[in-house]
Length: 148
Image (cartoon, rainbow, N blue to C red; front, top):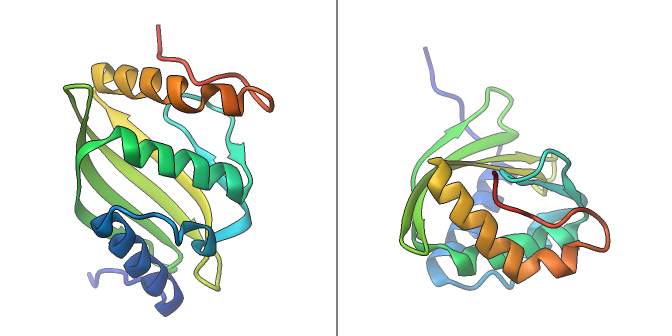
């Protein structure tokens, strides 16, 4: 069975994303996002809509993670979705996770979903994100809170 490959526009966006992660500077992120992009948090069922909100969350979480690194990248058969496996630490708690990213035909990110394990790492992530962006997101939705 042949492995799927990203479409050329998605490959270009992912290359830009990886350059930003490597440089530690996500200033170019808004250009990669569709205006109606959504972020799906591992802490909340309801997505956070809008490119500005997605950029805020991703910039904040990048500041929360310590030792962040991607390990694997997979593509869907249509070339418009990617799964990126990562590891990091949050306040001394090791985490593993995946970023599930969907793109439009122009290569813009339309949906960014994060899944994280184990529960102790997810709780640390939720607590830290709640401190940093909770008040900013509270006007539109419930604040991120750790489980339990």
